Amino acid sequence: MDAKVNGSLSLEEQRLQLSAAEQAGPCLLKNYARGDPSPNNFASFGDAPLGQSIPDLILVQLPGQTALAATVEAQKTAGRTLVCCNQVYVNSTPSWVAVFR
Image (cartoon, rainbow, N blue to C red; front, side, top):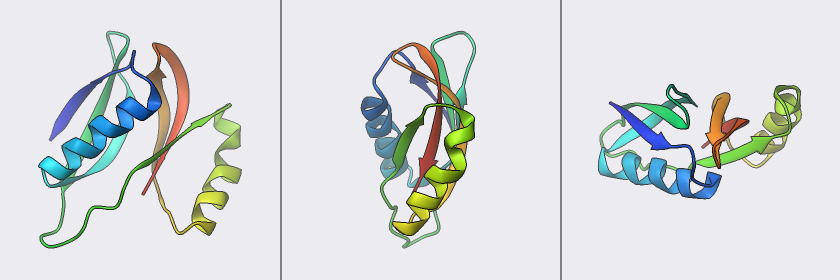
């Protein structure tokens, strides 16, 4: 399943939309990336295994792609794993965002 998310929204509003789509599926976010035309973002989902709970998504806006390694390490320490990291629109501005669960 694929979905379009309005990139003019804040990162938290986008996280809430993605989480709602996961719960309604039930499905798991696989990829989240900037789309065309701007400011659309596109989310790709895969089926969630039956009976599996769906952990909350954590979206982290990065100052640049080079900050990814430190962010991944910090999230790993908190028990989270990286789903994807791409440029997406946040408040209509292209930004690097890492998605964890």
